[in-house]
Image 1 (cartoon, rainbow, N blue to C red):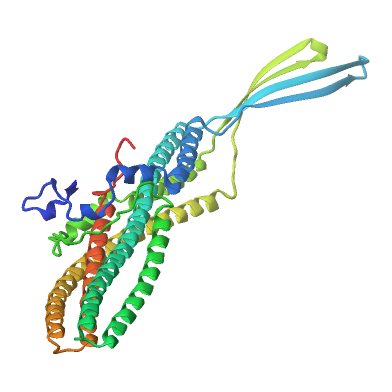
Image 2: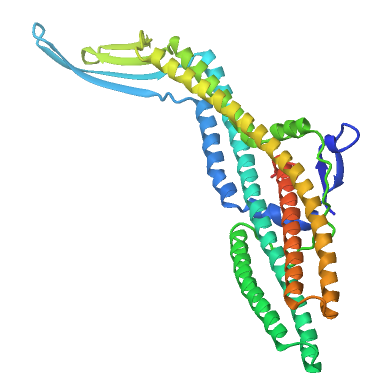
Length: 415
């Protein structure tokens, strides 16, 4: 079975350790999963987001202020001297960022690079959740189809027994008709379930490059799990979640942006170098100019807007943490309830199996009718289907918890 890293809460000592993954037989091969996730449209589309944030970081480091060139012509007319001359003025200007603003822009650039990296991890995680849900949808449809096939095999076997009894004159032809009608109903259910399986496989094949399981074996799947401490799971989910880290980085960026806007209270000077040619070239003047904006009436509003955006980002970060905490609690609660329901379902299967065997013997002895036997068989198969669904739901919820904790299908550092 596959080895995965599991929380210390699942072990006697508080430490990371490798333990057996109880549902690895129900999961796709990890190499196929990683290949599929790497080619997932969400992960591929995220490359554009990463390129944007990297370009944004480069913009912040380099600055946005261009060099500006000025050129002017003027005509000087001296009536007393009867002299006309064309004079030229040329200049270069550039706004210079203050050192405090340069340092703040570098911090914003670093935040942009962090967001670029985290956005890939978040896209990977979202794609993994979709793949997991699609995979188990196929597994549940496959398990239901297998149960129907088992029921059809039982009916075929019983039909052969009835035919022998009819030939021997020990059973009426009505019993064969009833069994054939039951088989026809099951055959229709099989067609419907096969169509459902084909639809779920089609959904899975959108993003999964491997092959789904051709047979679902639930006989060795455990019905009880040691879930460990709730708070430890919550801490692990929050610590590993890229969505929360992304929200934290966005909040940090908005804080830095608000501080950056506030720094505009100290305006950047504009430095200029000019050259003038006057008096028909008799005078050549080189000058240096410095200009500083005196007042920006919109600056206070811009600062207030940036601070409001920073507060909004903080609230979104808190909401994300609260949502993830609540989702983890609900999943753990669902897992605990599923284990109790699974135990009850297993007891029901054992009881219905015993009843079905008794009805088979009673029918062979002529103590019960064929309808009673068919009913007992139907009840047994339905109990098995309910147990199988609970087992697969337990496996899906537990696997989703591991995916959310990045203990299963997590993005490696080199990916």
